[in-house]
Length: 288
Image (tube, rainbow, N blue to C red; front, side):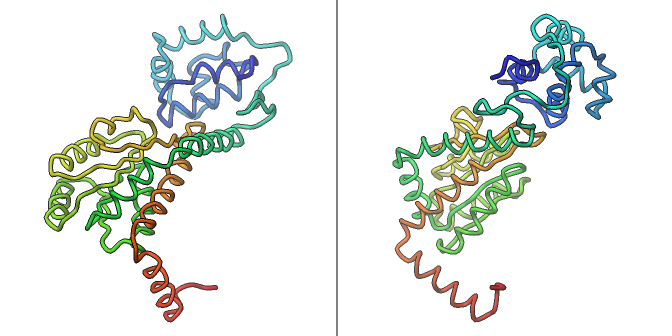
């Protein structure tokens, strides 16, 4: 990390789970790193396009009593450098200078994918997951809120090779009913995509699923995610936090890897794919 004002600010934010509004403030502070120690909370709020109370809550989230304490800290440990200016300088991931915040977010995602690649050097957890998912009839796939797109993507492709995939992407009182119905139909496993911010309902659903006899395979942003205590097999894939909203390239990639491992355990997977391609061609389903 750079020792520039922007770099020191980024170091201050690391390790804190910030809301989208708080990330807007953090990004604004990095862009105006040379000026921040002298801005009032009202001025910072106007620059970031948020409310003044949001700036106060942001300072508290970083561990300070309020914004004045945060500003005093910045004046002590991150004074502006002569001629530093503003506007998103500083270093991006990997030590490359001059990257803007969008490029830094991409570089952070690349690093998340590299970490996932290193994790997959031991294929045993993924292979075990593939066996569990392939043998479950039906197979439940759970993902709520931020994780719903990951669950839908997996379920869409899984249905091409697995005979019975049931997507759970909406919460509510019907969720446990659908788990019960799947268990009665013979389900033995549930795949859960769990991404921040973690809905309480997901944790409760996994607790219920395991009590009903299902084996839970989880894709989560961390091995210490709230769903860990309710998972039989958890494989982590980090999310990016460099933008206002999380980016989830690594969880998506891990989902495709699990699809591959599951398909390898389904003896008729290739036949199902060929059958689909034949029917799709006959229907003119895709524009070639």
